[in-house]
Length: 289
Image (cartoon, rainbow, N blue to C red; front, side, top):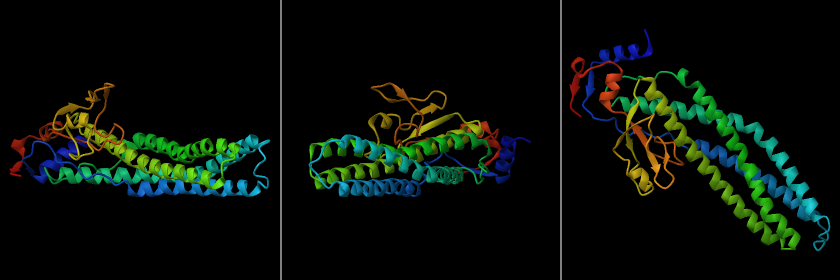
């Protein structure tokens, strides 16, 4: 007996469904834990940079001396890159693995809760069919985690090097460095928000398609942050293999969650879901919603 037939039998055994056209929006997985992990990565890199810069400035007994300073700075930032890479490498893989595990489980539970609004079963029992997707998302996030200190060091070098050579006061330089630290914090939080949304959308699509459901209704968060092009898609039906245009200027197409920081969701049509499982209304007791 295949997975679809097992689900069909459980649905028939459950014996009742609620009359709905589409499933409601599911609860979105939280990005708080992942955001906290990425902020730790960013703050550790900031601490390392702050320590090395203090050592560098304290060692400069003659602040007016500029001969050889460019080479010293290049050496300083090269050492920072090596230290930060070693520091981050030890944390990146377990952080990414936990992010994937948490989001996969949250998505499974949210989809099952969503399904309960139509019929009282849990069709999503395990993640065996998602292993490739989970591994790919973990690899992507390992690289994103490593990029947080790497990009920060590049930004700090671009701020510090020309100003040290020009003789700008250390206090002024460190104010600019702190601004780059703030940008790094923001970027870490954006990565967390974007990746949770993307992975949640990817998991939802895989799980829908595992049941034989290819069509969905686009659903936005219906708040002020929804992009106009996404708002135009709200309530319209599409298929995963023919995603709609989400950016009229570029012509870019995407399914819900795929666009940058997209919070939209794909809501499966109830009729398509039941048809894919081979369960007709005549076999179920219908309850009014």
